[in-house]
Length: 203
Image: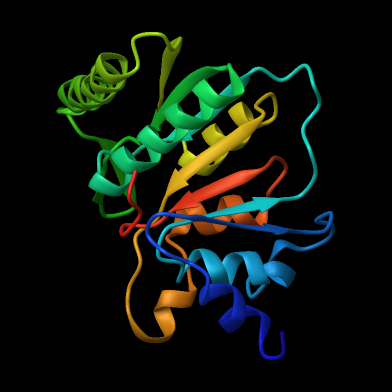
């Protein structure tokens, strides 16, 4: 084939398939990889994209998926469940949230609704997990609700995972080549095979 790698690989992407690309070992500043092939493809594929830095160690027995309550993250969760069944591994569903802070002059005060918001996040996560268990009764599914940056929470769980799955929103124009903040950050700091699921993905 002759042509730009991005355009040629994107031409094979459909809502019902998975495009797979490899990537080298990431060293130095992450900003070096903002326009890497994997990062750009993940912003414009029609289905799903797997970016593989290396094969994971054989003792890893968990697929991790990050969710945020959106429709595309539910697609990512279904995709992750399918991969967990194929690999005969467990599935960990991770949802991270941060304290809403109210700025008063130079003082930042925690919202009095913090407890209610935490309960709401817990209910959302439980609903996702219940849906997954209903359609995957033979799959061992666990969940983790954490109060921290999503990228930090996912990076921590991914260190012992065989696969990380994320959903991403996509836009039009030049912006379609860029991922949302969490997906983009995880591609930049990639350590394990990572699958990015686009809104058009059929799963």
